[in-house]
Amino acid sequence: MKEPYDAIVIGAGQAGPSLAVRLAGAGQRVAIVERSRFGGTCVNTGCIPTKTLVASAYAAHMTRRAAEFGVQLQGSVTVDMKRVKARKDEISARSRGGVEAWLRGTENCTVCQGHARFESPTEVRVGDRLLTAERIFINVGGRATTPPLPGIADTPYLTNTTLLDFDMLPRHLVIVGGGYVGLEFGQIFRRFGSEVTVIETASRPIAGEDADVSLGVREILENEGIRFRMNATCIALSRGKAGVIATVDCTEGEPEVAGTHVLLALGRTPNTDHLELEKAGVMRDSRGYITVNDELQTNVPGIWALGDCNGRGGFTHTSYNDFEIVAENLLAGGTRRVSDRIPAQNLYVDPPLGRAGMTETQARDSGRRVLIAKRPMTRVGRAIEKGETQGFMKVLVDGDSKQILGAAILGTGGDEVIHCVLDMMYARAPYTVLQRAMHIHPTVSELIPTMLGDLQPL
Image (cartoon, rainbow, N blue to C red; front, side, top):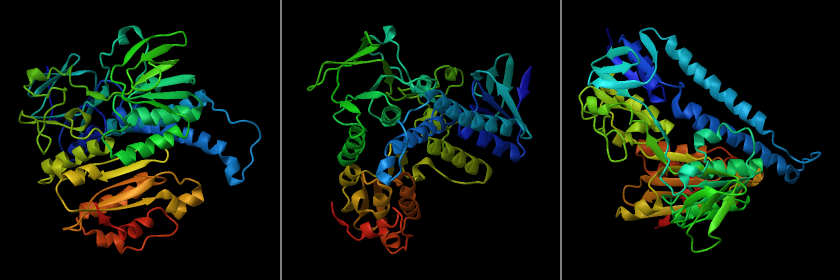
């Protein structure tokens, strides 16, 4: 027997629960389907657990530095990995349970647990239940990509998900991939006490960033003892005496890296391959992402795709913004679009990297008359006081419109400070508004107005 609803939401990640509750609150009868753990990537294998580990690693790092601040400790610093994992699990479980309780306690919202598969553009099967609705919202997220590296079938390897299950310390963690995931895990485990080697095919880590940013991050991590093998254009895995061997084809260094464990951090794959989308006629691109328009509608009327599975963001904040766009357009007659948002993200190494808008390279290639200002963190009083002077700040401005084009803040507090620039960009205000603002002393933010007084042609 068919179960009729006004809307079906597939997936309880960042966008799904908020949308289901908003629709239910508008009087619609909603079914939300979740096949595994509530909360999606962020709650279970992404932001919350990894940033919890970042906090533990920071505590270990600062404890080792205690003498620099005049604090004396007795004995050596050790890390209890079982307790580290338990704390991480407790925090994730609390968030996951909160999402589930919220959904189950919402009037007009039915929670269906199981794997969803389309049977038509208006029908979704979950086990022996057949749900029907004129509106269906896909929010199925993604998973770690497992590329067909030579030897991978015969070599034990870790992903961001399985590494989070560890309650022991790898003696030597080899990380294949120098992007956000690889660098964050690299610093976490280095601070816990592991040897860490990062292997990357490009000439520098986070190669999509400007050269000064990526090299600045590399310098920070190398100062903590992380080794990098760049230009590794031919990577293969095999078992070794210590655990694993990664064969690399680099212009410098030994041809092999031997470690006890290997982490694959080579991007994400959308969870769209088992939805039987073809039965609904929903199109995907060559990488498996569901194609959507500027309002997140698929090619099939009445079906939307939100979050990591649509290839339009890949972050928790972009997923939640997807919910806001769809909900306002459907329920409040809005005209919000994905193209209205400004790209922004943080890299949670320590010190963190906050990024908004264009990179320096993108600004230069845009053909605009660009102005740039840059300041090392060694000239930021707050950073000096905290003993955290690594990194720099830079801001890019359109020389004609005076609007801010982008910014990068690699330094203490950068993950929060970036928002004062981002908000100014959304306001489309000239940079002089921020330049003339009186910020509080002593902070990192107070140096942005000062820095804007030093703008020079790019």
